[in-house]
Length: 372
Image 1: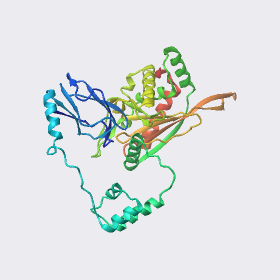
Image 2: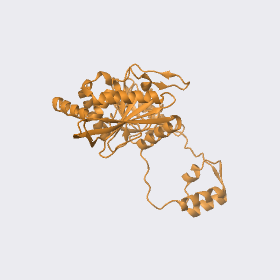
Image 3: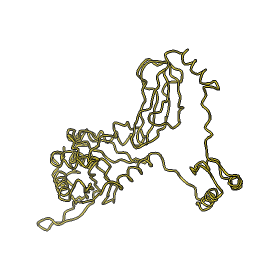
Image 4: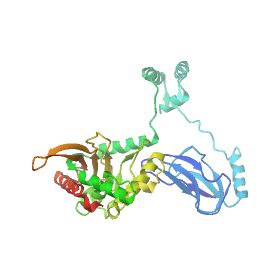
């Protein structure tokens, strides 16, 4: 008998959901093959068998499970599985039901019954002994609660909240902004889109521009370790924030400096589709050492995103806006401007470093030929 244990798929989650079994319980498995789909707060992952055998399912579809939990067994034969099932079904082998719980005084029990306080609520107090004062507190809390309907946060949103909380707790962030003329960059994006058939956008060119700064600005791609040292990276892996209405995702464009604008555009198109369906693989969401946060909704000028724990900065861009300026000869001319933002970990990056990166990104986007 071989146990199939659930690996750690997302360090931010303490539990996952087993979405479905890809093979029926009791099936014969030939070797390493996908057995089940498990969903974390960010991605769906296939769990593979560790070898051949007869599958015996321990965790049903739709149930929660945790890292390290045994979710199934593989038996050498159907006879061995049946023997296990028979022994597990006998009273001696069956696990005893867990009746452990708090001691509840008689007066507290009477008061709980009178006000409809459930056994689960009493257990949830976490007390060894539940007294009338504890029940009264529960009753007051229920009475003061709003009658308005409640909506629970999704697992994905709770994971986002955990990351934001950790960032706010641990990263002393500062921010700087630059105003850039994106007219030429938008023209290049349109040209590349027409030539390649891919949807090349201003964020695509920004991802490329950011990746090209890796050698000139290594601090922006470094990670601060727990002992206060800096771990530098050898390549630019650019994460991009993405929300298609089903939660925030941060897929990663790996080795972005080596990719063409067309290839980055195709990756983002695929990422948007996966964000809408919620079908990312874990590898697509890990490994970023810098982040780009596009906030290009029309009318949105500035945005201040968080610095993700484990990174030192995030680059944001707002929507482009038309402004009329006078040329050197006094002729009015329409220009397209956008605000480029940089939020950075002030423990690692100082203001001069931030200004230098913004200046180089401004140059890249205002003279964007190298980004094509």
